[in-house]
Image (cartoon, rainbow, N blue to C red; front, side, top):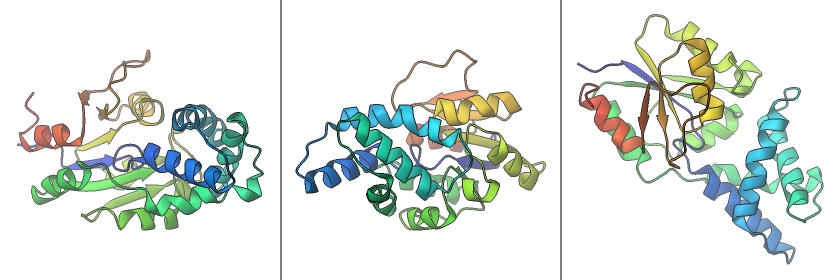
Length: 225
């Protein structure tokens, strides 16, 4: 018997390789202006700046991406106004899934597991991303819908309200955005630890997997280690 009937996923970082998408967008945009950026420096700055932007007053994810891109570019030595930073949200629909995403989702869906997405994004941007994903989703909660960004609790409370008594597990790569709030709310959570990171100081996830393929095998195997 499967341990859970319903699995929700974070999208960007868990299903979609957003780091490659972000780095490529910056490198290409800078190259058009004759500048060379180090992808690692871009991603390091992005990881520090985007949570700060999302912690402020709610703004659409398109606006969040433009504002973040401007600040990241400045930190990397590329002066860039927010009005010129639309390359980042414009690139999002092209960000690709990880190689194991669609096979793993297909395995889960074919076994009758209901699937959902809880994502820090606008509705239209997620709709564009979903064209890359091979299965339908029974539940979708966006930042635009709840007017909040994870690690705030609004996504999870909305999902809990809509799922009721379903045996629900959330699965995500980001410890900060997803694992921590799930632990705070008592929601079972699986950490898809794609980067091999050490666990955070606030308590571990209920389960940890190196990728979605390992997670899908565990689910279909009835939750056996």
